[in-house]
Amino acid sequence: MAVQTDIEANQYTLKSCVETMTAVTNLSHRLQIRTNEVQQLNAQLALLQRMYKDARAEISVLKAENKELKRKATVMFRFGGPPYAAVEEQGGGNLLGGLGSTEATPSRTAQDGGKKKRSAIE
Image (cartoon, rainbow, N blue to C red; front, side):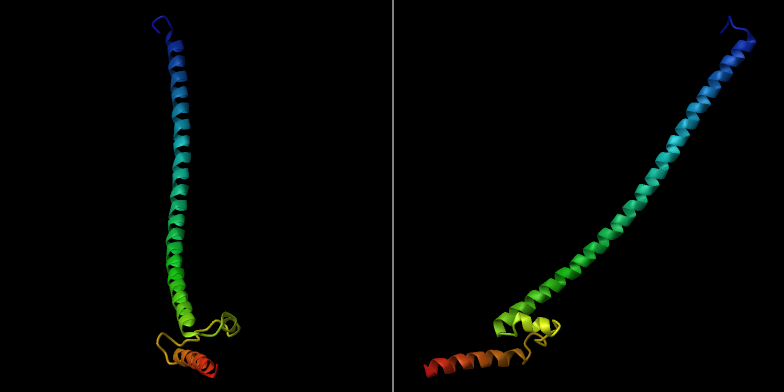
């Protein structure tokens, strides 16, 4: 630079400053783009976390319903409740009335009594 004139040195310095500013501007743009991507990914993550929480709650409800249906099926099997087709025709309502109700007991008594009468007749 010592051999250059002042004008040439100033032009070189100005050219270096412009190149540096261009590089810094490009880095700034890239950083802004990355920041926007991170914000979008954080929003997606929050949405997915909410969906996951809702799905877990729904699974919990379905498991409870499944457990209740299994219990009802067991009670119907043990106490000789109506066949599956009859339950479907009536809209799948609670035909047993509840565990230990008097509605389930007569059907078993009727079945046992019917079996005893048949064996006594034979």
